[in-house]
Image (tube, rainbow, N blue to C red; front, side, top):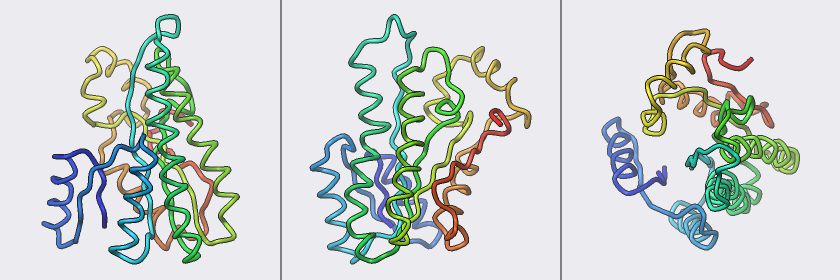
Length: 214
């Protein structure tokens, strides 16, 4: 497994995998740099011979009401959350199509399905990701490559820890299961879509949101 994340986070994830008996390699890459992404995928193929699974999980926020939103904040969010997934998928598809097998799972958001005030850029990027993956799924299904989306709700992450307590309370009130989700909830959904058990599932959005959006 190649774990791609930022510096210390990548190393910590690789160490956690190793502690559980797995084998992991941590590498850092700027996902908005197409040349760097292509080089990373090529290095994986050269070292391991194939690429079975791509999880596209990069995401940032630059929240602001529409009338105050700077063009740079729009561009940065779309570049990281949407365009990077295009770049990663395009690079990963070449070996997957050659081997006639592969799994691509992208991480969207409940906000991409229902919208949220102050997050027009983030919602657009995550909604665009859903349309992108559905279209891609139709293109590559004949090559036995599946493409699916996991759409998390309010999850306990570094990103949501920055949300004010009042905002968390407001959001939590919209969750029928009455709690925030955990990274493990999302990981379970991703693992399923990447597994053999999901070989007949493609072009789907698996919502993991405690019932927030139905």
